Length: 309
Ligand SMILES: Nc1ncnc2c1ncn2[C@@H]1O[C@H](COP(=O)(O)OP(=O)(O)OP(=O)(O)O)[C@@H](O)[C@H]1O
Ligand SMILES: [Mg+2]
Image (cartoon, rainbow, N blue to C red; front, top):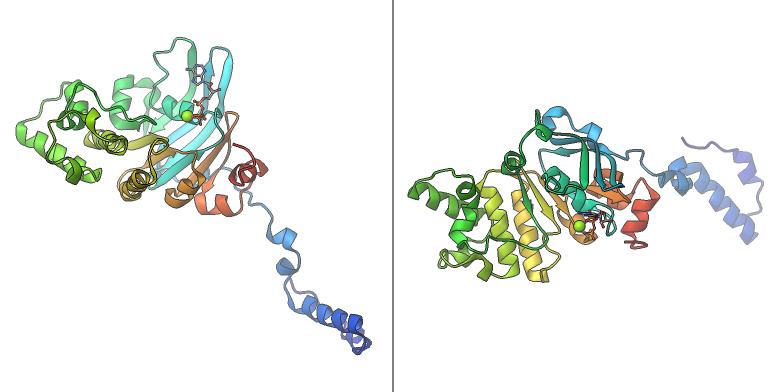
């Protein structure tokens, strides 16, 4: 809306008086500028979207979580989380230490199952399938997880580690299939060139960043539908971190990725969407570009500004 003004008021001003001259210029500007520029408070108004999940159609959604609660004994650590993850792209999960980020992705991967004092409630749909009804092993064959500390199987070689999903589930492969799977997935994980001459050495002899990429290759070899990563670069130096980030930038074009990170710069560099958790609640979930420029919640803003974390 453009404000109309009364030209008479301007003509009545004494232009030789500097304060009146300034008033005349300001008055003229007020006439020309649209409302949003004149009132920055309105321009900066927070967006209404707190959770982008509803904007993904069923066809665009790979994983849908409804009312997820996780209790450790009597403590409710995750409080009614509702979030849908898209089939395309990388979602970063951020939030201060202890807010429940790892608990969330561990619940997706059914890692709490063996703990008697942990109770998980809610609905998790992978595509059209309710995965809460599946055995944990079946879920892990479809949802891969890479942990903060890389964990190649210590008694297996690099070659065997890539094939471990097949070995541990008793799936039989011939020599040609094994070679193809190992080469293809080590290449996909940007590791092939570094290990092609030492495939029969133990995976634990590799550097931290290489072990992390070996664990990613292991998940990729199982052709999982989703890849979960819990702070995959927190123990790595900047060069190894960049290698993993480059890898994830490429992989996210082929496979949906959900990654916990403390590193806000990393989230802004490589994620398409960001979810912000605080004290076990999903506070905000939106496109990363939007959340990092105009967060809809003051707590998200405070976290992004480094005011707590
Ligand atoms: N197995 C468990 N038994 C009891 N409490 C647990 C268990 N696992 C996690 N917690 C508690 O649940 C809360 C959330 O933990 P979680 O590991 O999910 O936090 P986080 O956001 O991943 O933190 P960080 O950024 O430090 O990794 C914490 O208070 C933690 O102490
Ligand atoms: Mg954690």
